[in-house]
Amino acid sequence: RHIRAYRTGFLSKNRQVTVLGGGSFGTAMAIAAASKGNKVVILVRRQEIADKINNGTYSRLLGVDIDKFHITATIDPAIAFGKKIDDDNDHAGKPLRPKLIIHAVPVQASRSFLESVKDYVPKGVPIL
Image (cartoon, rainbow, N blue to C red; front, side, top):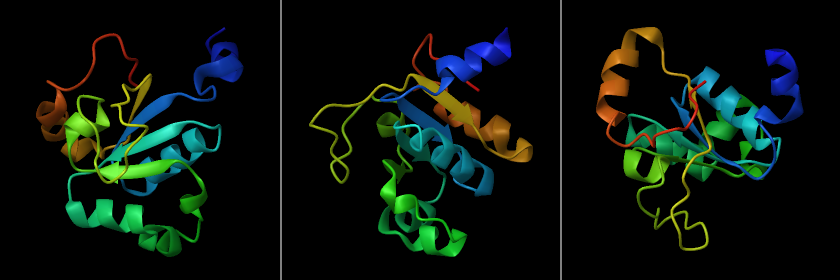
């Protein structure tokens, strides 16, 4: 039953998805979500990673054209969780509240990462 629910719309189109972590697994999850037509924001810890994702450098390093998807990256949890607008990647002038959060942070960094964003996570949004 859970598998069928996943197949029938867990990553359905036109949703806002926030991915926690911009490593290889986080990027893969972002691409999977974006390839279904979702707008994806990747929340990363370091500005240089966000810059590489946003300017296409990361795409070339991975050998995958992530530029064709609706993927942006930020270090600001308020942007990632729809609390404020990202001036650099304005989405029609309104903050986008995620409908799904994907946790892709390595286990050794999970506790500190989740502690740092816990006040921004909207209530009722599923975390995968």
